[in-house]
Length: 130
Image (cartoon, rainbow, N blue to C red; front, side):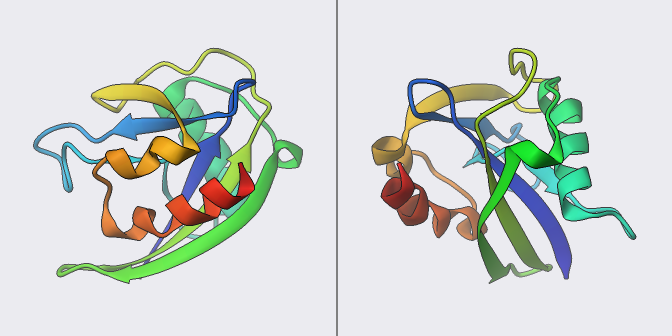
C-alpha cells in the first residue's frame, strides 16, 4: 500500500489549488490536490511540507496543516491510502515545478475536473467545509 499526502491549499478568496498531472505520467491529464508519496520512516506532515516545496516552491509548517479526511482506493496495480490536509498559510506564490498546469477553483466547481478515483471522495468534504 502506498501512503500519499495531499493538500487543499485555500487562498484568501476561498479557492482551492488543483494541479494537473502531466500527460504520459501515471493517471496523466487528471487534476489532483498537490502532494506526493510519504517516504519510509517519514512523518506525513513532513512529507507534505517537502512535497509542497518540491512541486510548488512554497514553504509552510506543521502548525499550518490541518488533517481533514482520508481515502483508500484499490487501483489495478496498487492500493493507496491518501491523507488530505488543508492549508491556508504558506510563504511564496505557488508555481508549477511538476504539474502541467495549476488552477485555483471554488469548491462548488471541483466536480468539473476529472480526478483520480482516490481524490474524488474529498470533493463533498471540501464543499461542506467551504
